[in-house]
Amino acid sequence: MIPIALDACIEGIGLLGPGFSSWPHARPILEGKQPYQPQPTVLPTPALLPAAERRRSGAIVRLTLATGLEAVTAAGLDAATLPTVFASSGGDGETCHAICEMLASSDRRISPTRFHNSVHNAAAGYWSIATGAMAASSALSAHDASFGAGLLEAVIQAAVDGTRTLLLACDTRYPQPLHGARPMLDAFGIALVLAPQAGVRSLARISVALSAAGADTLDDPALERLRLGVPAARGLPLLRALSLSQDGPVVLDYLDDTRLAVTVAAC
Image (cartoon, rainbow, N blue to C red; front, side, top):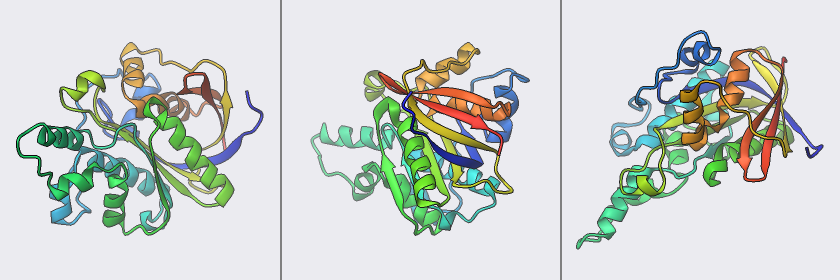
């Protein structure tokens, strides 16, 4: 393990995915008190968006708003004040599919709405519209390592800049035929509010470093399939440790030869 670690405290969690409607709903499942029952992800209507933007928003926007607002509300914060880190392995898969269909047709005129929704930081723009956020925002992608890359960036910002930072790690499916080349189980998102110091709402302190150790897996075969089936779900072992209030190390998938060692401790 590389002996350089950065610390931050988790103050709010948002979660939405197949079989998970929220963080409070997921906790007893991750604790092993209730069975996990996979069901298609239900994405709520983004009520904070004006009507025109609401109609134009895709799955990645609805997922981002749902998880981000849950985490910010749990932390008792104003979303407009928080710097954000958006992490997604592919952005808006439905829009990418629609643009590819247009380019493969005889009419190659791409609608402006499709084009602006196709850029990787589109969710960040909609977040700003919905919440009034004017703080700094980053959008990154690292294929299957996107959750780990987003967590590293958000922890670095919280620790180095000394400010609360919101991580929004979300992925959605591609329709066929792109799904055949890049299969993904379903839409899944995790949001974390990270703070540089412990506060009254702190749930746990995490210390993140690079590691060569093997990644933690999940005992439930269906949950393990979800962890491997969506890049954003690589954070599930961390959520399991948080749900159990379990101090100690958690190793998350990151790069092929490098993982993230996340030490969880009470604040």
